[in-house]
Amino acid sequence: MAGEVNILDRMVRAVDKVRERMMRAARALEAASVPYAVAGGNAVAAWVATVDETAVRNTRDVDILLARTDFERASQALAGAGFRHRHSAGLDMFLDGPEASPREALHVVFAAEHVRPDHSDVAPPVSAFRALPPGIRFLELEALVRMKLNGWRDKDRVHLRDLIDVGLLDRSFAARLPEPLAARLAELLDNPDG
Image (cartoon, rainbow, N blue to C red; front, side, top):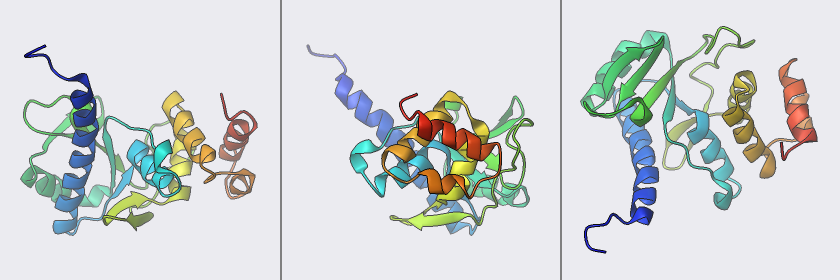
């Protein structure tokens, strides 16, 4: 019918907006020489894509690992790319424009700090990245896995299962992890379907 929005177009646009937001932020931080690494679901998707692009899961936001000492420079660079800083409920984020919601944001994770007080590990250093084409810095696999095991939310377990499913995580990986992270990974490996 005329005037109706094509739902498939909206689905594609939603995915494209997240990827575009991630790439725009990465370009702005690179141009300002601010060290960063993409973390969270987008980093999981990038690692999964190195093995099987058909297994990539979409995510709705972008997590960026930054050093707290670089926060002001990052804020300036991101503002120049159209992002607006917001501090809410103890979290720093950069909304994608003046009318954007927190779902349309870059969420900041500070390197070498606890993401949440109950985490046994601090977030990795910002140097723990691997640049993947097209040159975006993604959190290296072991650091990403540790963060996901620390978080241990439903979505973290889903992301870990995605990495298991494509063969990036197996029992040998658990040997590199401290407790309780090794036990959590073993639990997922023993029951990959949840």
